[in-house]
Image 1 (tube, rainbow, N blue to C red):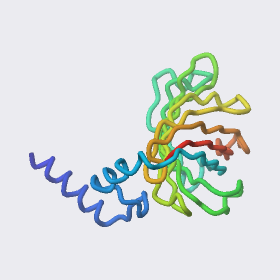
Image 2: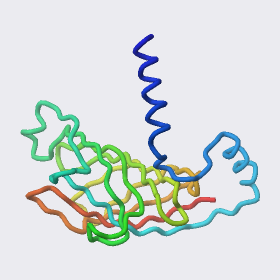
Image 3: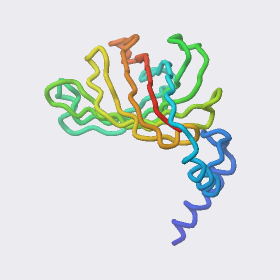
Length: 192
């Protein structure tokens, strides 16, 4: 019981001390209920987004770190069993110094023994512009050697509540020595 109380106190302290990554969108139960009641008057719209994801594995402050692997992963040519967590910046342009508009936070694992493919579980968290405080959730296969990879959008929050759509990823730059990469994203999302 003491461990649970200590963990709860830690979580409350962290929650109060840190600003929300989700911006200023009111996510209280009353605000969400009000949004749902007004939904019948809303029209679904299509939004197009374009940005770059910077996956930095080897640097002073990496944005991607390996957290698990199977015993056989190091012997696998496809890194089967490797699991990685990420908090990658999303930028307007491909340059690392380009304006940051959000972050991709999530997990990917190498899931194929025959080709290099990952299962991606990502939240795209936007912290700039009219989508500040909104998120999109993606879950899908990412066969990284394909020129284009489609991943479904399963939902979202804020301006993207009840979202559905497709995120298309293309490798923009990859350094095989450092394993750092930049991926270009085109997103088509339907939302209210």
